[in-house]
Image 1 (cartoon, rainbow, N blue to C red):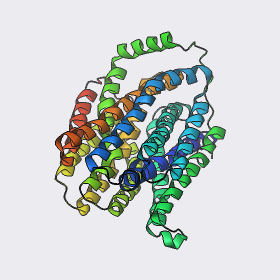
Image 2: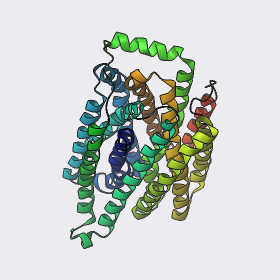
Image 3: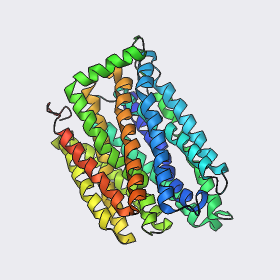
Image 4: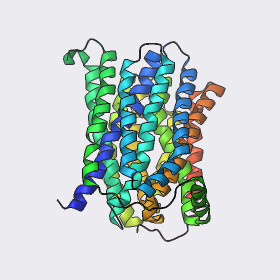
Length: 410
């Protein structure tokens, strides 16, 4: 394997590593364990509000620091260093969840928020490093490979953890609760272990030697505001990634509140991971064939239809169908959005620009879960909260149409 291909695989393997947190903790076990163990006895709408608020606060913190840290990493050539710092922070916080006892819901939320910050902030530097391993038309393929490996790796570890929880006696564990605690620890170890190859095989660009302060950062903001293609794309991405991220984070909580069993939630989430693996790769090829923007439109149309479907959903079988369809588009939309943006920005300032990219994603993540939580607690109707996401998909598609330049990844 050539050094370039090895670097691309090592970069993609970081998604294999950190998606273990996204799948096992962020989307599945924490919402379930929080509702049934740490916050047992709390009204369902109240626990939904606290969970949404915590997700929003973690995203808000990352939103504030991502652009400045990205600019700092560009100047010093430290994107790999900061990726490593946040990986350690996130993995240690994840392991610490295993130590929190029953009814300590506030501590559980605080530690979970710290783990989420590590995941979100690390992902910003992970995204920025794509320009060090791919260029031109290969960016679609490499970006899609990252998401595909993320879903496969996250899905495999999640499958192991589900089996350990469901058949805990066969693993010589006293209870499912102990199995869940072990799952938090194995996610932390997986996260660190599979991030290591990137540090050896991916070579970072030289420092830009520019000063990095708030004045320089403000100059970059002004530059983004004047760059219409970048600005219009970022605004579109801000809206539709909000809905996608919220759907990922709140789906298990939504299903539980509709009366579906925790087993059904975990099985559906497993289904998402393994469907997402091949379809993320297929979306990369689709982006090469019809253009990234058109492929993103297709994915957003499917997501919009799914919000209406989720509102009328009644049975666990219907939830499985929802999960399978989500898996066909979620990785592809995310991968092509990343590669599309990589072609719009200066390569030597990727950390700074991807800081803004992830800042908007996290600002969106502030609004989405919070909007669902507020609607749920204000109306007492869990189903109405899901319809909010449809507005974000529509708005994102309309703003994406304002990016008028020739599709850069065609």
